[in-house]
Image (cartoon, rainbow, N blue to C red; front, top):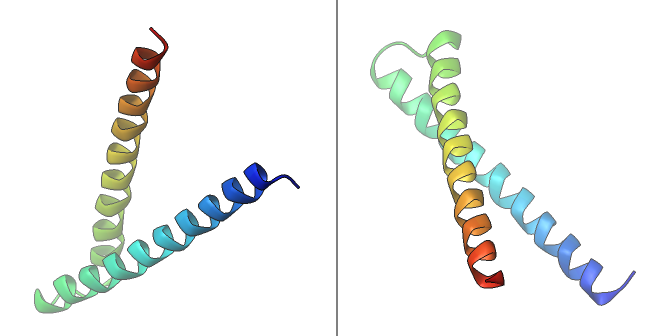
Length: 76
């Protein structure tokens, strides 16, 4: 495996660890929010996590679009 491939693999591993940490942190936030509202039910937690995943997807897509545009501009 080349140095470049090792670097890519390390970056992917780091990204996966970060995503897991964000999910754990947000799950804790959802639990506290639902518990404070007295609605610490499966539905409340599920709805809260759904909003989190929608937000992550939205932000990821916009970052990818910005990077694509930047890459296209760099090629010109």
